[in-house]
Amino acid sequence: MSLDAATIRRIATLARIRVEDHELTSLAAELNGILGWIEQLNEVNVDGIEPLTGAQQMALKMREDDVTDGGYPEKVLANAPDRAGSFYAVPKVVE
Image 1 (tube, rainbow, N blue to C red):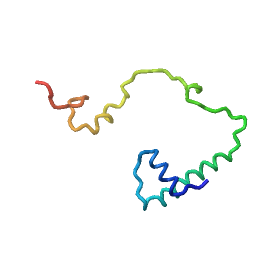
Image 2: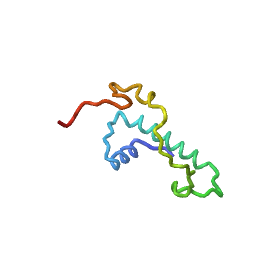
Image 3: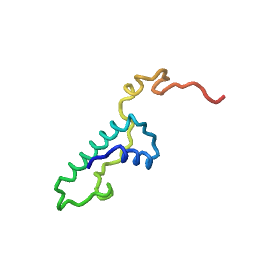
Image 4: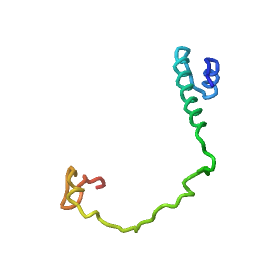
């Protein structure tokens, strides 16, 4: 399938985008390339493959939800502009 300038103008009108006349040829080439990729995908044999409509059908691996402090406060505070002991020091906001 190949798109001509009139079809590109119609698509642009339906999409509510402004396309100048000098952009029509490059846009037609890009859209024809995309349609070529879609034609390549249509050649793939998908017989016997169930469609996946969402991630709901997949079971996620569960892990223990352990709360930790990370165990390396010096690494966490290494880039702090100002610190007070093992805490970030920030300017007072409320008086």
